[in-house]
Image (cartoon, rainbow, N blue to C red; front, side, top):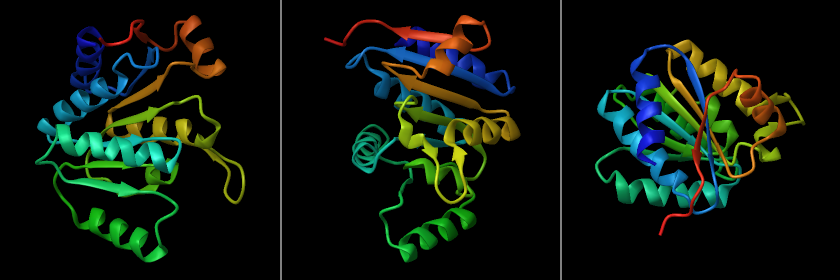
Length: 184
């Protein structure tokens, strides 16, 4: 975990857009790495988007974040919230000028997060990160664009990476950080 975290911190400090695959077996501590990375990013004055493929996982990530980062503003955003709640959160973030942590599903990518430094897609292989109806988009591509604008870091986390992601690793276009063993 420490080696993976150190690599990601170095990528953030380089002030160039970067992407990493965090490839770890279930129970290897990927969430702990995400939260420590978030702690670092927030300490640098930059915000973090932590995305999960489904609402239940987003709620769990929010609870974990609140325990590890108790003094950090944590926002939760997903499509099952009422339109009024989503609009209120959007407006709140638009007025917010300090670093914050936003946990949510793919639609959270379109929030006006101040000084976005890092986007994490947990379970990046999940098809829920792909929007087919209405305006079609792939969350990975939108996240890549957003971190590119702010010279941030995109972390793709999975125990079973998408075939395209794995191919990018094999071609040397995407660094892979590995967590091969379960914690404990």
